[in-house]
View 1 (cartoon, rainbow, N blue to C red):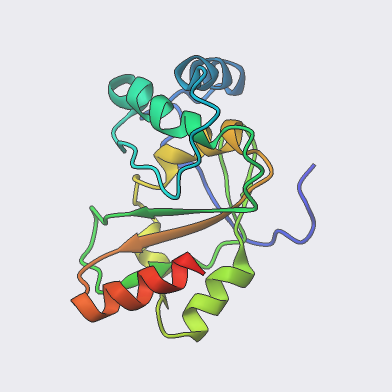
View 2 (tube, rainbow, N blue to C red):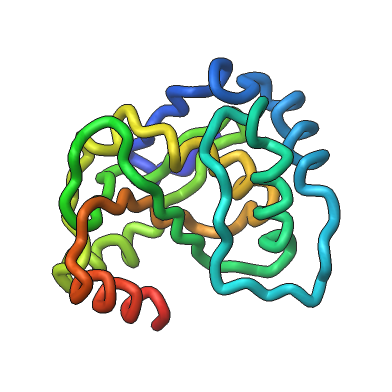
Length: 171
């Protein structure tokens, strides 16, 4: 049942092509790749590959493993852009991103605060065909099912802008 407050959902455009489209098989793959990891690890960030799961799922699972059962309220997924030039950091206007495992709600409050602070611009066209965020979402959905998503594409940035953006993410 879809939450009625979700009005705009970014579809899972890669399901069945870049990763398993069947929810049961996808969950089994992700759970296998996540495995178990050191409970003492408390990362501030993870770096995971964004290729199709057949090539990168085992490595992405090792990266996302540390996000399991941590009670994260929000997860920022930052990615490069492969489809069109982007300046700065750009957001999508969706309320959720879909996956075969169900939608992941976007933390629209945090996204909008970053926009209001002048650190992020709204540019849905950059997100429309971009794969790098979507590839991460099955791992996020299984590892941190209650976390909200802040999906951002990062393009060319000045050193000063990088410092301002990173400083804001730390707070």
